[in-house]
Length: 302
Image 1 (cartoon, rainbow, N blue to C red):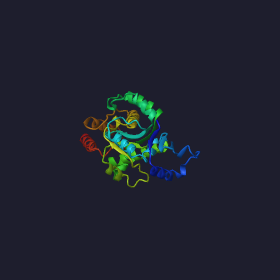
Image 2: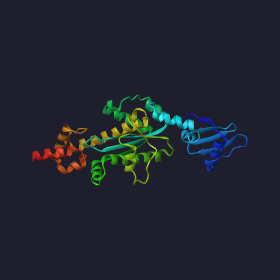
Image 3: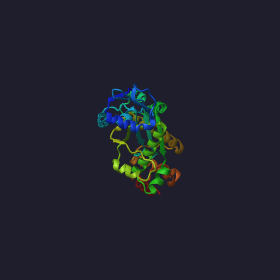
Image 4: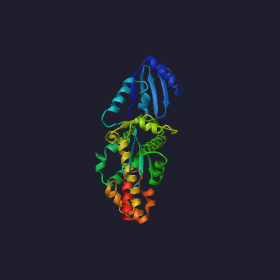
């Protein structure tokens, strides 16, 4: 990443000296006015009061001292241009599927891998075949820092029974995945993005009792179009779901169906008839309206 440089005032220099007091680096008088080192960022202030920030966390440090830069980043956050700064993104698969688990992924993507993902030329995740999802996911997992959380339906249904709703469950999983990735990345990340599925206020209200909460999030619609970490997370979460789904198909020896609705209900009825109604706790999300229809169909057949 290119160094970030801009002119500062004497007043700002004074604040920087105080702020970086414990992170100062020795330098010869006459060369610099300040020299400090933080996690993944080297900071220098020249005799001409030019502040320079180098390293992975240059943006994170620089925005503290330049209102102009901070406004530029805020403007970029609000734009629809592809984010070229290192960032974290999260996505999930399975929330709309009656059968199968909930798979949540968070990814950290640095500048180098932004270029790599961009060159894959993935324009629409929805149009990818299952094999393409698998192939891309394997490539991405080798390059980016990820956290994958898979919630099977046994645990999902227990959480629902304990009074949680699906939006609450998703918030908890997303937050944990973000925490995991930040711990693996071991650096401050300015941009942390999740797909907006509920309001920020509701999201954080669901997490009010959590010990660690990642708070400085951006909630974006169609986030995968602007943030490649979200795109990577979406592909990897789909891959995880497909892997689990294939395992379920093999175990149950029944051809399954995605989504919800009458065709899926018919498959679930077949599963219940073959293995008993109790197996539904492990196979489906019981809080879906499909469950009433399935039980009604089973009652008619008995």
